[in-house]
Image (cartoon, rainbow, N blue to C red):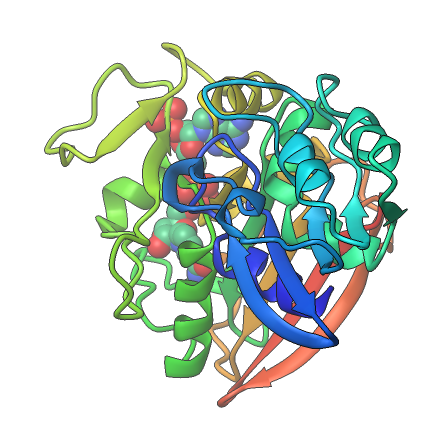
Length: 321
Ligand SMILES: NC(=O)c1ccc[n+]([C@@H]2O[C@H](COP(=O)([O-])OP(=O)(O)OC[C@H]3O[C@@H](n4cnc5c(N)ncnc54)[C@H](OP(=O)(O)O)[C@@H]3O)[C@@H](O)[C@H]2O)c1
């Protein structure tokens, strides 16, 4: 399953409404092809393979069972007669869920599902969260000093962290369908929010969350998200993004929006990049006030990873569902 998972990972944020499926094919014990869903969601991974009878196929998501603009992948696989198919996880789309496996089993193929399922769910989290919870998978990114500050009192905040941490942040942009920032961040920092890793076509869509009807000198590629006036209902905003096909959302906000999202339990992964700087109590806090404070991690979150990135440290928190 690993080559298939890696191929799926590379297409994260690139496949629109369709899942970023990876597939790998073995013939006589040798790996002969590795593919993933194409940019924009077509072609599907399985349809790119030349499967011969007796081959072994690994695919990160159950092959689709419904005929659309293209034939069902489960039928294509069944007709090609591989001897064995390994599947990462089931497709929650009711048109496929379980039916894809049945089609292949009825053709006499040995099918085993749930292979590296946890990793497959992580790699395709955008599609799965959109299907199951009708909202995008949310990654919140915070860059902060050792004392939890994100900007000087006057709002200056550039380069809290060093090169390696910023490059890692660009990797998160490459894997996102869209970035959402708070209006205050957008107005003060005028960030470009592009993916500067030298990869073409990896810039996500950009949304600014705001209750304002307009924001002056808004670039053409940036859209305002929200209805007029006041704090926005974040569940509603995320539902709207999911309906537009956004599965992988990266939030690069200031402290207020970050706190609102955490408070509403709408963050799936939190990336904290922490430098050795100390800015003191006059500087702005990276995280706004949280109500009902306890000496606990945000509800449901665990620390999944700690890593040194140059001079800075990354702590990755995840919600285990
Ligand atoms: N170090 C970092 O990682 C990092 C990243 C980004 C920003 N920053 C810094 O953070 C500072 C700005 O942070 P901030 O906390 O003042 O603002 P923010 O979180 O970026 O944006 C807050 C704005 O979002 C809009 N909003 C709408 N609904 C909301 C909701 N439910 N909850 C929260 N906000 C909602 C409101 O805009 P309207 O008033 O228009 O309705 C609100 O004023 C800047 O100095 C920036 O440089 C640091």
